[in-house]
Amino acid sequence: MSLPERLKFGIFMAPFHMQNENPTASLQRDLELIQHLDRLGYDEAWIGEHHSGGWEIIASPEMFMGIAAERTRNIKLGSGVVSLPYHHPLMVANRFALLDHLTRGRIMMGVGPGALVGDAYMLGITPATQRRRMEESLGIILRLWTEDEPITYEGEWFTLREARAHLKPYTRPHPLIAVAASQSPSGMITGGKFGATILSLNTVRFPGLIPDHKKFWTIAEESAAQHGQTVNRHDWGLVLHVHLADSRKEAIEQAREKAGMYQRDYFEKTLGVESDFKGPRDQIIDYMVENGSWCVGTPDDLIAHIKRLDEESGGFGRLLLQATEWGTSEQVDHSYELVARYVMPHFQGSTKSLDVSQKWSEEMEPFLNSLRSKAMDVAKADYLARMKAGSKTKPSKTKAPAKSKTKAKK
Image 1 (cartoon, rainbow, N blue to C red):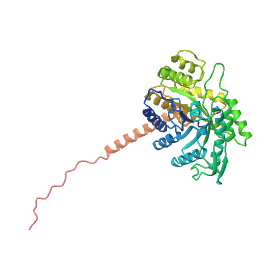
Image 2: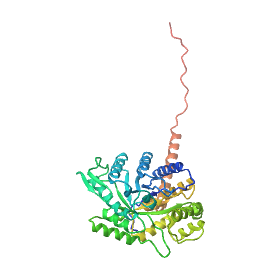
Image 3: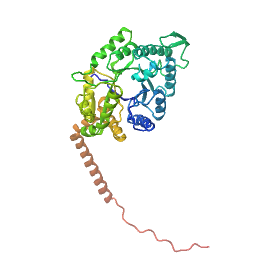
Image 4: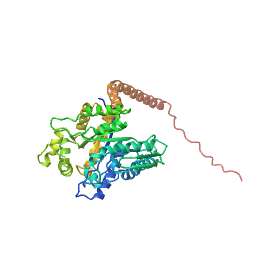
């Protein structure tokens, strides 16, 4: 395997919620899920920013991350992603520096151009300009965090006049920066340009086509070299749709209805993404599992899927589970628990020494058992010897001296 010694596990939370559900309760479930993952030992959670479409209802990842940080202890929280063309870069730099201090370094900044065309349209932004504006903004944010001199800059869509970040980040020189990449190579190019962590959001397979992760990573390396940067594939994150249960049949039946709604009503109807599967909605999950786009099954199925992704990609460093609600709250929580109990240890080496210890004990069992038997024989012999010695030296019974009947003279 090309995976690191300890693969990181996390989630990518857009989030996705059905429109017929109470949004207030949905957001509370999102926060409770982060708490659940923190208790289970997940490494990180990435929180999205969206403003249209009706499904993804977190408009400010920073606000959500701040509340989640107060409810958790260890899990790191990242924006997944903040859409840089929607914000002035000085505001983004200052908000994340503040959050970095408030969380004592538990935040990460994932950036992107903005995924939903509806968001850009409402803001009066031409979609064709978004990638370029994102790169311009990210360059300025990094300068604000690392340079001490004031910055005056006339950009394509923003202006800075003697600007500086008066509060530098808690993390030096700055929090982890991640760039989102989807089907096109542009995200890999941008990630390489800035030497950033890269989050590949789509591992969906189309007929006869396996995502060429190795080629995409080469693009990132070439872009990094052109700009005097380096990228590390052990920082690279792949996002995968996962739902686990105690059996594969159980997992598929739990997720069948809502996974079909998710694919057809969100990706196909809301986003207009073409799908090559035209069959009934309740059969979508069978198709996506069969072609390897989704992993719905058991911990063993996910272990095998990760190994396949490792082979296809040449190695990565973090696996991010796409946060969905394909089952009941209890079923979803159980799915994450199964990952933590049985999949994480396989790729983090946390049970290796336990296995070695158990096998050693098993191999040594005849010898150790003989020592135990000898010890018991010695203990038994000692006990009998003490009992025998005690019976020989047992004192005879004697009468106590009689009390004098003479009264003391007055």
